[in-house]
Length: 81
Image (tube, rainbow, N blue to C red; front, side, top):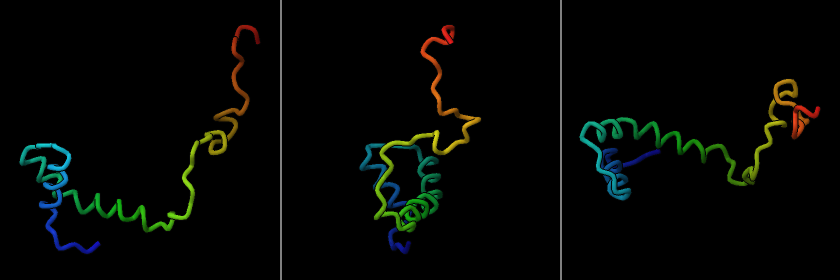
């Protein structure tokens, strides 16, 4: 991402908009890390997933092996099993 605005000005504007007043050291850290965070956020859009529908729910059974996460639920009363 090409930007002409200094990172410190962006960080200070974001903090002011959020109503946050960190110390000078905290602002310096945020300024130092801003480029990395901005680049990471930009990469989310670079994946070309804007046409893909979001996952409305996540079923871990589909993602993990059955021996780790069995598909059959535990009985309501384990003593009755």
